[in-house]
Picture 1 (cartoon, rainbow, N blue to C red):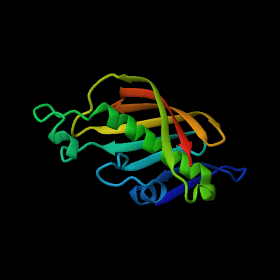
Picture 2 (picture 1 turned 90 degrees about the vertical axis):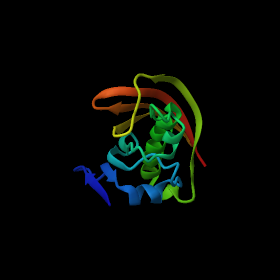
Picture 3 (picture 1 turned 120 degrees about the horizontal axis):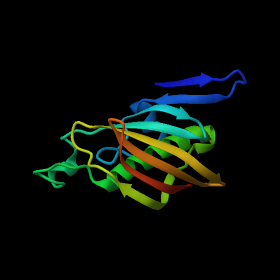
Length: 157
């Protein structure tokens, strides 16, 4: 399901994406798909994705068996996938046949652990886009508290 909200000028300003739409927009699949839903998207600007963290995630078998914690790198990956959904949605038909690739990750901070049962909100905001390179700031938030934050860039090819 995809829902669009249209302004009086007729431009699409916000949209949401369920798992079926996410699977159409980005190539990631289990066990690497890290976004379950995008609850809010302002095309060409920002998005909020959701990752429902379950004890059934394969990485919890080894990270860490007695104290399960979502690996920070996967939190950043979830932010990047949310950004990729935003990019592909913003590009519309121009996105056909293209992929979004990580280019860089900067200023990463991990503030608190993400554990099974958490609902990880992935807030991404476009900082800049030039040609096929987009820069974002991102935050992973659980229960209103920042768990991780980073800036990152992606290339569309």
